[in-house]
Length: 158
Image (cartoon, rainbow, N blue to C red; front, side, top):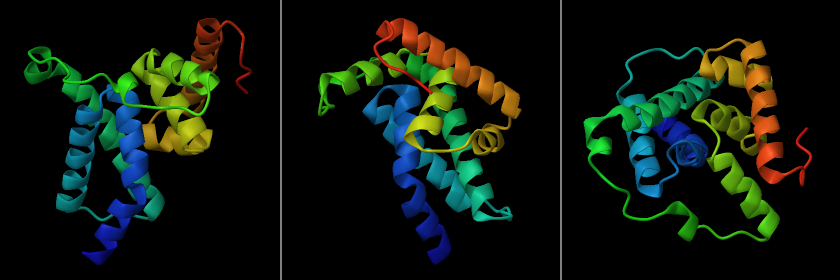
């Protein structure tokens, strides 16, 4: 049980940030994180390695985030607060980028977040999302292009 607690502590912030990038709502992101780690703690499966655990919790976080939007509960509720009112940035440039990323489609938002904010490689993202590396590359490329358009060329995304 101590090992599972260490995994939760290690990946908690990463999963919260990922859920926040997907849901764009603090309360919903907290619900996703809770659900991810409840599923992890209840998981009766043998994980091959810590890399396998990381990929599993990332995949579950994305799946839980997406399933929230299709639930009847979500369709009948309105968020209590807007995320942009609760976040502060060191500079205006960071807020422009952050809000531009928030406006991307979920599939682009996920790969952009994992690549830039979580420093994951294309192969790691591919394994975590269970898609081909070429799919990750194309989604990163398209996401960057969309960001350039939104930001009117003010940033250079590599």
